Length: 320
Image (cartoon, rainbow, N blue to C red; front, side, top):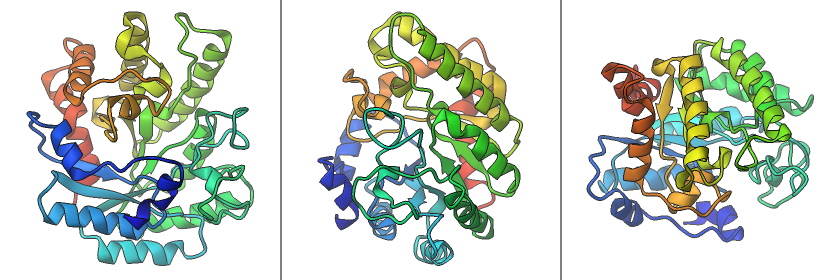
């Protein structure tokens, strides 16, 4: 799988359809959506997933592919993806940036570190770029983003909390592009037993940004990768109460019709849940059961169905 060369460079192992089939054994899954995984060849990754769909190895019904929307040929890339990938429903391009990639800025994602200052993907690790706030790159990114409407594509936003306001300004200018915020907006807390001053400051930035996003009716939220937010919640009741409270706060802010639970599944439960911030494993079935316990008795059965499938189905497949 040559499209995964960047991940290979980082030492990330393959995760195959056969492994996924084993992980979901005994779970009744109607359909899933594949979200891009930092491919070095976005079209190659999408075509591989198409082959998995055609061979009926997985219940994937939609593909969210990668595309560097700031690239000079973003329009051509999108047209090619749309013409070659029958199950294409959306685009994600990871943009988390709080400063130069490294230990001083742990919230900056390695995905943005592979770009030059001009936004060119060189498949190597550098300091990174801010596609949403850089005065040179943001207009280029917006030009590519605007093309999504012409192809009836959604956008998965993965960014840092401090970027949410800039993203909201961008999205307000393009209400015809449905957007989902990945991973609850990614507030990064310490994981300490009680909230630290830094945690409180992080949550204040996150809440402000999420309020701006909630004001945009075409923006939804994915409730996922919660161990990134509160490391260790799977094995600690107090931490679970904290992360559950943040999830419930978000559902109240956006409404169940704009929120969707997601496993973010790849590799194993610890990575899917925390992206490496803890090593506490959890199965897909247990993850769903925990999520369900947080909302049972607090929302109607109809709203719970939305949270566990209805919202995602409407977001990715409505009108297709």
